[in-house]
Image (cartoon, rainbow, N blue to C red; front, side, top):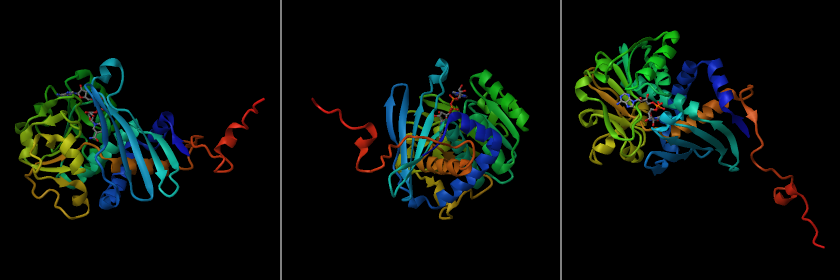
Length: 341
Ligand code: NAD
């Protein structure tokens, strides 16, 4: 069984470059979104507590099975922990044997960014020139790189209620060639944006972006509202604009649209990728990708990471599955029983 540790995941990302990996993942996601109906699709299994959630996200395409363990605890940073951590497994459907185990805290940031990148590729105006980011925590730099990889945008206005977090993100992004300004409010950040990403963490029905702060023609990737009772957008943004989602049964529970009637119109993003549904239909419309994160994206990310690191020093062999010489003699691995005297 192959394994990517945190050290090797960060080594692989550093050596390859996060933007290169995100761009590759966007292409891989586009392929898997186009064969969406081949996958098992169930809402994730969530265990909620008053301060967070622990989730399992399984899927299979009939050949490979994948699951991710992930948490979401918005109060964690105040105690020195991250909001989101994760790991995942890829297994062979034929034998049921796990094939690959990986850290997924970093990989989730890459895949979430890549999914935003894919949405922006098909929904943002091709002439988009400026982006805004509301929320500058762990996901922020990855999200910015994803938008640049798909639309070439380097101008970014950032807002975070924690000015230190916004400054830190700006410091990380400037050396990568971004023209970043830290703004005093979401309205200031959004004022001339063509693409807006909201990636805040707060277990409440917050409004981090109001409809009157959004220009016609904008594309919004709303990634922070991803749990019951945890949303980010002014309800008018999802009520009055076309909303694109991952898997409707899950997003109805977890996404921005949890605030809307259960029959409000939505478009699953994969149907735009495979050509069944239109994406953006005019230069003036506001499009909203109500992202919550779906198991198929983790499947794609795990397979991509496994293949890209195969045969490199970043992929290790680990001894996780017991393999007795005789498959019917597991006991043989622990020795003969002690004779009773
Ligand atoms: P984080 O805690 O590292 O960062 C969140 C940032 O939001 C913090 O810096 C915080 O100060 C800021 N913030 C909170 N309220 C704000 C407000 N009203 N206006 C501006 N900034 C505000 O979290 P993260 O790891 O970056 O994740 C961000 C969000 O994305 C979380 O809610 C997480 O659950 C979600 N997420 C979604 C997906 C997905 O697939 N959709 C994947 C990963 C994470």
